[in-house]
Amino acid sequence: MPETPAAHEAITADVVAHLANLARIALTPEEIQTLTGELGVIIDSVAKVSEVATPDVIATSHPIRLVNVFRPDVAGPTLTTEQALAGAPEHDGSRFKVSAILGEEQ
Image 1 (tube, rainbow, N blue to C red):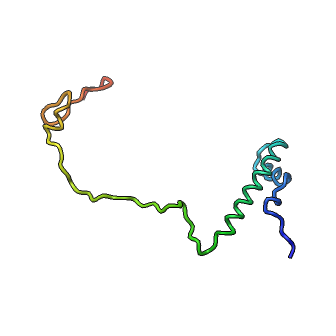
Image 2 (image 1 turned 180 degrees about the horizontal axis):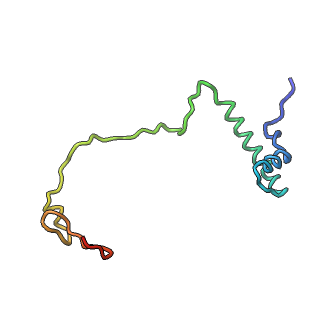
Image 3 (image 1 turned 60 degrees about the vertical axis):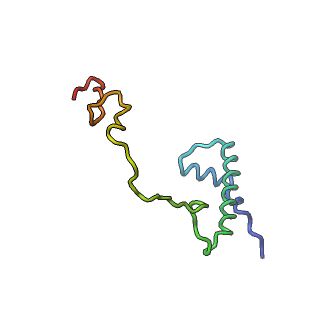
């Protein structure tokens, strides 16, 4: 059986130039050569992953299963009104008092 060429061999400088033209991207000859090598490496990497990606392997978006950790929503001890207002610079006895800002009057 004849040996098939590596996937990256399908990416030539002519192919990269053609794709750049279709995408309306102006590339210099140096950029075309660089991209030819980089695209070849990418295609080879995808081919390697495709070799091991079989139907019995479940696709994942993250290598570690992510799970939200929730605690029970139970009311706990809260501050009294007096305790909450104790450190406030101004209050009217039952709520915080805040000065108007930016010249706005309420």
